[in-house]
Structure formats: structure tokens, C-alpha cells
Length: 112
Image (cartoon, rainbow, N blue to C red; front, side, top):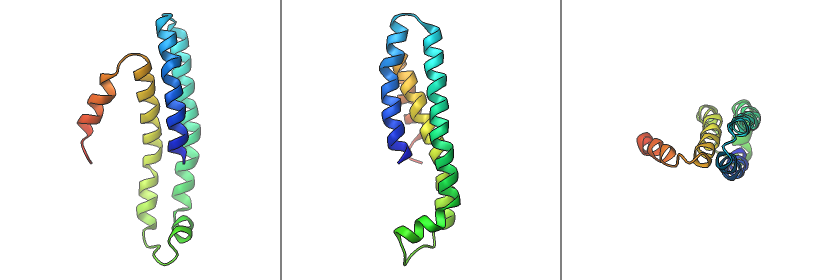
């Protein structure tokens, strides 16, 4: 759920930064990027902590007969914050016109 909210947020960031770049307004670019990263952290951190703390009850709710993956879900919850930051930074880079940086980064990460 937090990732889908952040995708919309990062998508809205692209034209805002592109507009500021076209006007050569570096202060607005910095402010919008900083604000976006702050909001992303405010979305991501509570979701990461909540999913880590409530991994057991979440698994019991979704899979009442097979809830042995609590530790795996706790470890997986740590990826939420990094994925949200990745989405936001990629949106800012695309708005700034650096389209190849996220693409090259994705290619370097591979499938793992």
C-alpha cells in the first residue's frame, strides 16, 4: 500500500521539477526534492516499522493455516523504505532530465 501511494507522489514530482528546471529555478528544485524525500520518509518509516512489528499478526490474518514466515516478512519489510526512496529519487531525476541514470541503475542492479 505505501508503495502505490508513493508511485503517485513520485509521478507528480516529475512535472514539478521539470517546470522549475525550465525556469532555471534551482531553489524550487531543491525545495521540492527535499520536501518529496521528507514525505517519502514520513510514509515509509512508519510502514516499515509497522510491518516489521506486526509481521506475525499480518501473516495469521492472511494465512491462518501457514504462518511460519514471520521472520521472512520482518526482513522483507526493511525493503519498503529503500523502495520508496528509490521511487522518489527516480522521479526527481526524471524531472531534472536525467532519464538514463535510473535506467542504468536498474540495469546494474540485475534481478537480485
